[in-house]
Length: 498
Image (cartoon, rainbow, N blue to C red):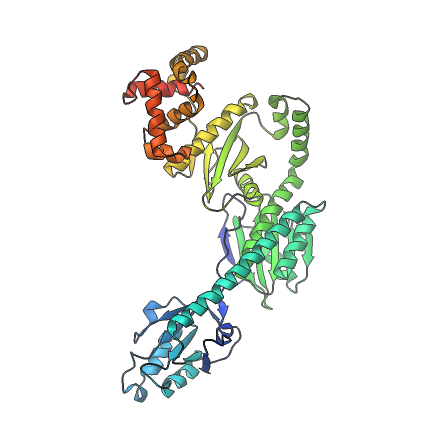
């Protein structure tokens, strides 16, 4: 299909951005402001004309300073006295149109008492809306009104997206989750939502559209390419979008709507994430296996006994924190899908994911990750602590992903029982203190960050002076010089046994 846009396949299903783009505002809404008393005196009165901002310029050629979509405001300071007898105004207006300017506002004071007739004629010829700004209305007031209207539109769009997210999440928890999610999505975008199977056949759908055939064609096109999303416009103007669900499972979400508002992609992306999880469970039957594993654990089975139900013998524990927005269940589920595991725990401001150790986790956009060494089920508790420490190090060093060391090397030269006995003896003075847990964690983090006070403070969420006091206390209890690299190496080796 001509005009189709294809986006390459990422490692994760489509995830909703935290904030949808700010919607533009209709020019008619600005003209309706009685306090501004603006009046359109030339150009088309198309209700679809929208503004993306306001800009003031007295340059004879404003082209280099416009991004497109602005209301350009001028008092005509740049206009020469003989401008009306030449091509000045034609050149001026044509450059505004070429730059994508949405409209021109001309102030009547203090330079001109009336709008030049040649400027009115040029705006009519180039179909650029021309507004007369009365003397009592400042350009600052006009610009402020534009931003106020944009902020109201943005707030309304955020409210619409938030309500849609909540309704989609509620639909996913119903007994018929897939049809419920599709119905909610179709209702929210005012069109049709369809789930296509691996062969491009329609599995379920909701809503109505006159573009069923073009939407199915777009879905088949997406299935034939390693892409995450595709978009197109049907011959009747219907806006089409398709979203690949999961990683290579062959399901596609198709959406057809009469328009494409800034928040619609966000809403559809949330639905795609939910459907990715739902279709993944439908295909693999893993939901029943996880339920069985949970019941056995609650009835007293050991983790090693139920691990085969979850799909592996060796596992990684991942701790994750979002870089900006607060954690929510949809984002946590999307993270799990991106890491290839539905075993997700949302706890306070950290998401924990249990991942089969059949491939190293990759960085996830918008998240900071700490990854444990691979572990058998009996060692999951230790792996959980490793992931927590790796996450603290990742945050302190501003690294997207930090992996816990495998422990190979020097540790392999010393038998485990001897290494643990040495660690207990070396660290005994600290363990005997009242604040042993805080001291040991601070010492471990400080050593892992090469003695950086500031990074250790960030990793532990304490003041740097607190770090200094704790490290000084450790040095006093151990009776040793922590600036000595040999001492640091021995302590690090001992702490790795814990």
